[in-house]
Length: 201
Image (cartoon, rainbow, N blue to C red; front, side, top):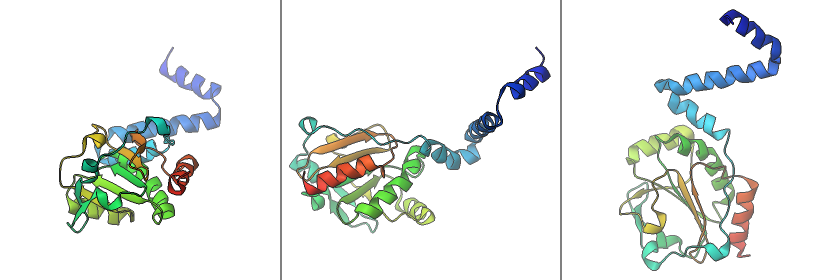
């Protein structure tokens, strides 16, 4: 069958809405293949398919040790901060980078979660990047959640070859959730879980 006939048959058999979706899909694929647009398009594409992660049941929770809490970080001003500063409280710990499309995809959801829970839980977003690069990125995007920089080797409980990776730690130092990859962090399921952790129920 000739190409022209195939095209004609395609338009005859497909509904207008299906054709529009097909064109959008192929356009996104094309944009993802172009290096100059990949960084901007990929997060939007990934964000479309984000969903909330599954929590860990209490009996399976790994507990942090005193050594884990002694993990040193640096804040945006270069001041030393130990994870122990937040011990006894619920912690949202996230490893990320500005160059990582999945990280960028989940950032709007993290910002929304931060807006709702910044008075109830501690947000610790950790990166290994240059502070100036991170500061520029945060300012451009209007993100206000706190960012920390690695000053020492990551505790074994948090080691992951994947970014983003997120841990939610309960008041007792138990890892209530571990999730590798991007997620929809402002989902109702997550907010319900955080409410329960904050209230201790």
